[in-house]
Image (tube, rainbow, N blue to C red):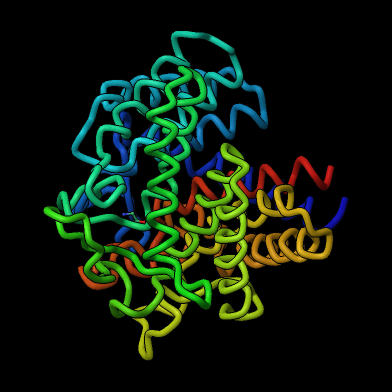
Length: 366
Ligand code: GLY
């Protein structure tokens, strides 16, 4: 057994233990971030975008173990969010349904389950602003978030499954607008962009969770790295692959050798040293890019870098295995530094993308 195989097994066993405790002690509760390592608290949500990540982890455990317990829990926590397929208040239906119903459909081929995924994608498509050619964020009509790149995949899927050319055009245009105004010459990304609603003119780059409007919030960059790769896999539009690779190169150039960035690369005094959820997302996105790029040397670089990240995140410095009383799996994540939410804590999407990246690596090393 290689060291990485040992560490992946250990991480999954620990994840199963933590998740079983969570769902048995707090049934039907959807946590977002920990406070002092505890999931249940009265802290602000800001926006409701995380309800798919618990079911998503349960599906990942079922895919790995094929145990009925995880299957029943995964179905239960997926069903609890089914009504969100028509939710027009958030730009996050990809996060909710790709991690749950899409996994469920891939396992079963059940058309009723696919219908939920397609409807969620169609709902996301309703966010499209013709003036400006983008999908609006949850904040306002004039606002576009980089995070939406990670949710646009479900629109491509809905368009593909229904043969809806207009939906396909909207998803593609959103990606090209984001590419044009958010991804800078060095591959760094803006978090938010503001448009003129009357003319569609792009006005300025802004941020909510990063250090400054002209800096690069790490998780946002990893949403772009991963999301542009997904968009390329649907469209085969070379511009989208080139953008994903530009983001990947920025990440690799600017991040310490252990593969874990701070919340924002430009911040002189970060609230905490690490943003581990960004690293987990980067690992999964780089793993995908290694399959998508046409260049063998870059494929090797992305794959090796993803493995470096996972090697780091499976050490007890990040994996909470030696931290008594800690309820999460992965420590040192960050939700919203400016608001003081979930800083240096476990975060639900970090847990999900960590397990997802471990699954990809496990399938390849075994
Ligand atoms: N709002 C999504 C995120 O914090 O990444």
